[in-house]
Each structure stands twice: as C-alpha cells, then as structure tokens.
Image (cartoon, rainbow, N blue to C red; front, side, top):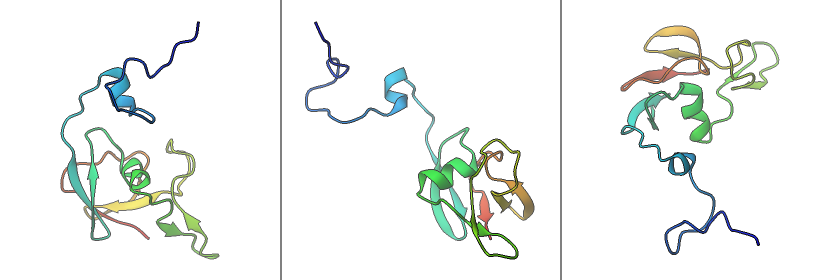
Length: 108
C-alpha cells in the first residue's frame, strides 16, 4: 500500500508546502528593511543575506579589479563575498547580520 504525503492537506491544496506549515511554525509578523532604496520584507531571525536571496537578489557587489559579481558564497561568515553596509556601518557580512526593523542597507 502506498500513501500520499499530500493526504492530510485541505481540499484543493497542491504543490510543495512551505516548511513553516509542515512543522506548524507560526512566525512573528514580517517587517521592512531598505536595500539600496528598495523596500524588502524580512522575518524575525532572518539574515540580510537570506532577505536578499528570498527577493531574488543573487549578487550585489563586484570584485575590485575584475568587476566580477559577488553575493552569498559560503553562507557561514568565512569568506568576504557578501559584504554590505548597514545603517552606516561598513564591511558587515550579509550572511551573518540579522535583519532588524528599519535597517538601511547599502551594497556595492
């Protein structure tokens, strides 16, 4: 006998489920940060790198000499590819910096 992992879904619900739904998570309400003048929504505990990635942004700065695109690379704070400025504080790693309501982020 085979069982469907969809069998406990409400009628009409299809496609993959959001992880929060699967575990029954109820995240706190989102908030807004500004990245290069563009408003983006973040949720509590999310890094700025995760906010950018969720918004479809894959690179936000370039290398000094070759002007090659950079963004999240290691995702754990080892490299320096995801550097950003938050509220005037330069050279922060996006993958390690938690988003806070009202943050003003600049890239490049």
